[in-house]
Length: 70
Image (tube, rainbow, N blue to C red):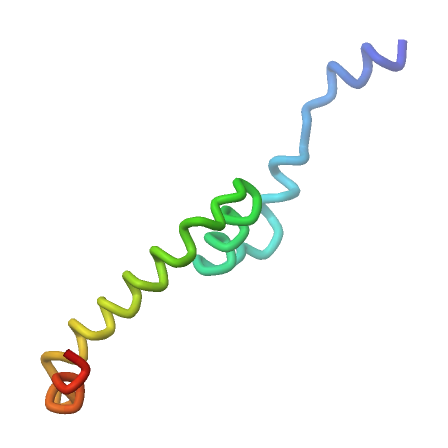
């Protein structure tokens, strides 16, 4: 009988999880990498972040200090 009562009750775990505090984008992405064991993506992402920073800084007054690296 107790199994029938549990089947009739709705599962509220989704609602309880949605009411909690949401993680940030970076924390959620790190959790994704850890959960799915995608550690090989970390060096690729670091290189992309460095290239993005160089592109952004290349259009500013910092550009003359970046050119000697190349």
